[in-house]
Length: 197
Image (cartoon, rainbow, N blue to C red):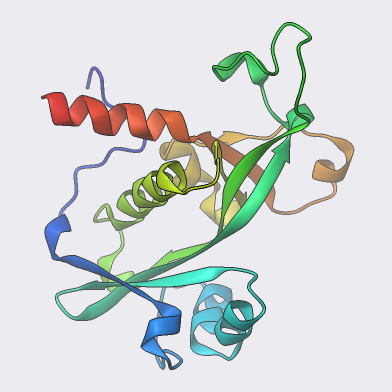
């Protein structure tokens, strides 16, 4: 479809019925969650999520649909050094034409993002990426990119959302999970275009 952004999706649920609760407001661990990814499920249903919150390593948000826990995401601050990025694809004069006044771009990292099996393939993950992009754009501190260290099984999802692979620098070659990034401006441009339509 012409003009469709890669992370847009034909959502099969009513997005207006999604609600978001910060984990710290819930105050207790989730007992059950089944995304099909044991590592993600274990994070949400064990003390690890509480420890992340307490140590301020990431903030987790629980996503509900008509009272059912359908997804969660964890975000934290990050930065991505310019040598990891295809600078030509980003607008901005501070890293072009040898005019480098910065070494890295401020980023918001998606530490974890998972949807319960019962609600997968209904557009929730893409809605959450978009929501996280909007959060990044409206933070009082500057954030230009969304970043993720994607597991091999999640790479296709993030590519469909418009993420790009970071350049394969020496440290990146040693990792199983791939660093990926998405320019927040792309998400905001799509949201602005939709309000005009």
